[in-house]
Image 1 (cartoon, rainbow, N blue to C red):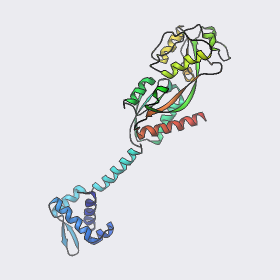
Image 2 (image 1 turned 120 degrees about the vertical axis):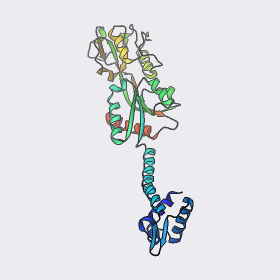
Image 3 (image 1 turned 30 degrees about the vertical axis):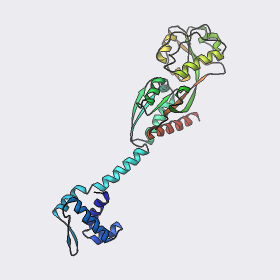
Image 4 (image 1 turned 45 degrees about the vertical axis):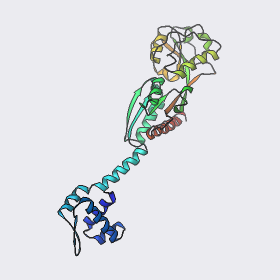
Length: 300
């Protein structure tokens, strides 16, 4: 039984006449009559009484009508639902983001813009470091993520830069380098341990901090590591060393920690929106588009 058989049946049932039903459907009466006979043969019973002035439903026809009347509309609704899903207008977007991105306005702006454009999409959110987010994208646990990209992700992940964040020095409040209005020369910290998260947790930030020290003319001594940036700042507060962190982390007002701008050339790290390179979902691509637009407006 095909959908067109149901459409033909409904037209005859509603018109009560094969000629008028054929005109309504835009087909000839003989082909319509043939299609109805085929339907009756498939069902195994007569659906219409042929009468001089038209056609009347049999008892079987009335029972059939009751069941099939909603089908064409439901088929239209199902087709539209499929088209909306293909356009990424419905479904669930599994979005990941790094803890440090929470402090940058581009994350909130991206989610806000996406929600306004696609209100019927459900969002599930996961906060983790960039390495975990990368694994989530590769293992199909996440559809998209805002993370700090690195070259090692290039083969499996499609990433688009959103913003460049300057790094600033986080130093113990009692350190001589904690005060002053001029940009800080990193060489003043060359005798202090550099406190970082492990490289496996966040490759780009880890490497950018070490490279900044090398660009300033010294090889940093790596001090105690911590799993999260907030933990690193606690170690700075405890006077175990200094760290280089994205500028947005100034918002973390931690007792015993002072933030200093750095002397040019100022190192930076990027925030990017990413999704799997192979078979990304339309939802992920839509979010990436909205994130890039939000970032463009932010930088403008």
